[in-house]
Length: 117
Ligand code: 5GP
Ligand code: ZN
Image 1 (tube, rainbow, N blue to C red):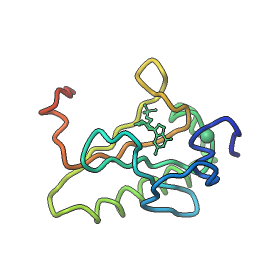
Image 2: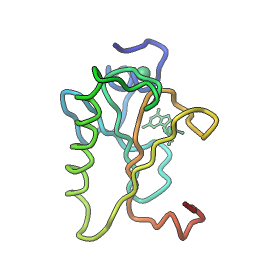
Image 3: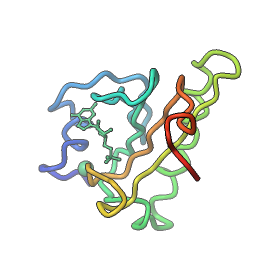
Image 4: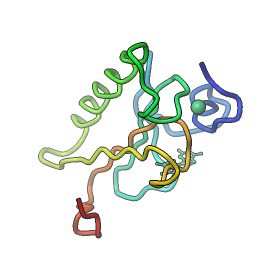
């Protein structure tokens, strides 16, 4: 199910241009328009779901494919580059586009830039 008002649904339907780095049956991975690291991709399931709090058993194939796309994209990085996967789930924690997505970031040590976990 895709929704007409959602910017990521429009990107999936190619109604809005994006720079695609990987596409599968269930997932599109695009370059973030406002990158926060030298490598900053967005992995987006081709199914409108607001965030990970709404996952169900029926959406499992999409989640598995997101993980497989992470593995594929990691192989495009220089050896030992490392990468972070970040997912904001809810506007209260900084989610601005309300369609589930994972940020794939590399080329920058986020902990040296102030991130603390
Ligand atoms: P969030 O804040 O929801 O976790 O992340 C949304 C991300 O989408 C942000 O990093 C933002 O830069 C990116 N973004 C917003 N609009 C567009 C767009 O039209 N195209 C692309 N490629 N990225 C976008
Ligand atoms: Zn959507």
